[in-house]
Image 1 (spheres, rainbow, N blue to C red):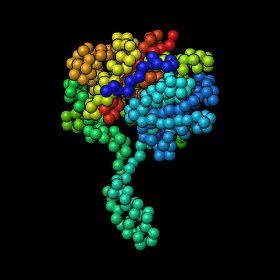
Image 2: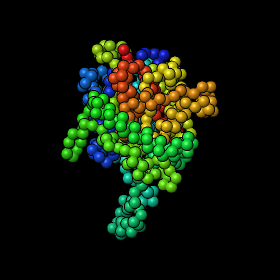
Image 3: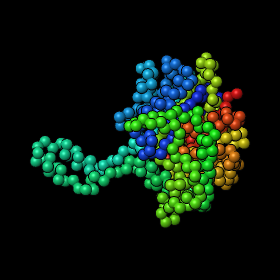
Image 4: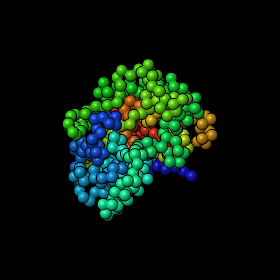
Length: 438
């Protein structure tokens, strides 16, 4: 059975005109009071202004979002209306866990490719600060009984059934980061890879340090400046213009002091060598090549192919190794043709495990049915501007940032082709091949 794989060799050529993101900010910090709708609207609005694209030219709006807000369950429609788009413009929100943002891009790609739209706003947004605290089912039933009570005596009787434990909340974020099939949280699946590939703590900490150093270096060089729109969050409306998460003075000594978080006794995954819980939003403008020409816009690049592929949930971090071969094959390429790779850093061990799996003949034969390895992911090719260990991972938006950062890096370095890929909670991988337009 084939996975969800598509190549841009039927229909119209699809390009990415541009993109913008908010700063990536640790949950509970500078963006904690910004609604996820605003995390989506702000970069979308700034992008349209910078590209000088009329609102009437937008045909559709698609955003990825995981923690669907109760007051804006179809987040994309609210974003479209707040942008001032015509009421006739449709919008829908997609959810593929960590690949929700990439799902938005690929759905926009298909709409444009097959002539269902000429211009689509595609993005992702996540306010992980806003993940709710939930009452247990037992407590919920008691609240219902209290609400249904009609007399003072009945209300008093219902209230008397409450116990202190009924007011201990269930943290929705912890539940959401636990796999519904294998029962392990994402950190435990990372520990599985540490055991399977014999990746020790020192290797993970060294990779984490590299991520911080690369992000800090990229930020100091001004690389991220043009992809970030300054944000002015309530209640003080002070400017947040840069990512809050990367540590300039991070060190191996500091990382080594952190205790394992998911397996306290034997584990190797810590808060320091894993991505942080983060708020942020990102938007791209997807269009046909003909529409780009009529608007007089030189695109950032074009989409060549994409693929989604399932894998064992308890090894979900290997998703890139499962999805990448199909995306490459459908683009008519091999990894040797790829100049830059953005692979989401959910955990340091997950990136390191993928490097091993990509270059393993045994993995290719037994897991992928291939006669040769996918190929090596070299350090000078992979995440050259750092990644989510330093920047963070707002789950609904990360897939969009990977593509935006990748295309901007290709432009900066004068290179041609790139691969954006990430693992997906629940046991999936997503991969996309893009190309810089000349």
